[in-house]
Image (cartoon, rainbow, N blue to C red; front, side, top):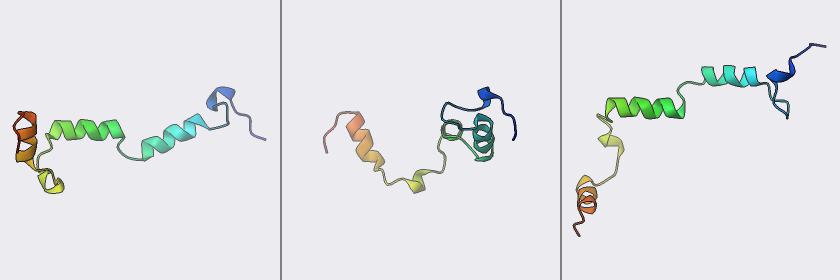
Length: 65
């Protein structure tokens, strides 16, 4: 039987090191994606949005349609 350090597992038996390894291999995290989008300024993303920019501007400035 293999001997393991108890600190390596959660109280329910999850291998913490394995979870960390899988997370590192999984790609960008949610926060990394948010940071990347913020840095790029969302340039070129308008084609993916169905938001009516003029309607939003009117709502922001308190004007009724």
